[in-house]
Amino acid sequence: MIVLYYFPIRARNEALRMMLLYGGIDHNYHTIEFDEWDAGTETAFKEMIPSGHTGRKQLPVLKCLDGSLMSESLDIANYIANIISCNKGSKNNDDGANPDQQQYAEKLFMLREGEKYGSPLGFDNYGLANPILNWFPKEKSIQMIPSFLELLPSTLTYIAEELKLSKSISKSNSSSNNNDDDDCPLFFGGNEPNMGDFQVFHYVNNICTLDGGFTMNHRISQTDTQTLQNWYNSIQNIPVIGNYLSNRPKPGTKKIGRPGSIMYTETDPSMMEIVQVELKKYTTT
Image (cartoon, rainbow, N blue to C red):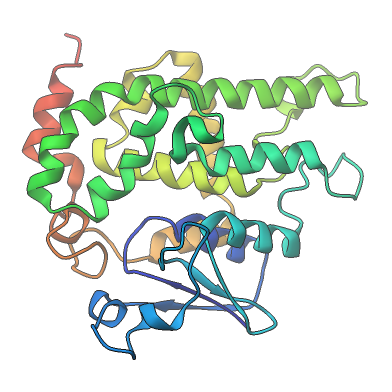
């Protein structure tokens, strides 16, 4: 059976968990507590796993069907996607894997890496959603929040424009002459989400956890807001995904986030004073 190992935080595990659930893959999820990870002994979990491409030992790690251990988020995502055919794009395509669609899914999955994977200049800010909420001490994150929030409109606008582009391409490639937008795919992956959809959803979800959805609803164009909301709702309305999101550990319960982080200590991160003060700057009267 497949086993996914990760820390008790909402970060690089989330898209992988959603993919496993979406694909109906029988699996276990094993939370590695921080003291279990780096116990300073040969029995520490860190010493039992393979190094990634960078030579570092890090999570997530996946126990594959053959019992081998796989590290690196992108490799794991591709492994899962190959099992569930999640990155083939629209069912209107042929049944074979689409290399262009897979490459695009990988680009979306790795947006956090910035220009290295074709992200726009300055997009590295997007990847800070994970550590600001889950990893850094709250005091450090508070110092980072103003600049992070300032750049969010360009981040979400880029994602919305990519969604509109995907929809336009799918529409032009469709054999149907129906021009009704309601018949066009709702996902980056076409009629079904690909691994990029789940990864971007995770980051947007973390962004909304921090700002209460303010940027998506009030700081970008109405068209982009509607595009993002339709896509976001389409992901969370997938029954297994909605059930997972409802039942995962909540902020402030001390069951999620690194001890001392915002996710660990705050029941509602969007109501933190620093967040409210910064968002007030963008409120029009």
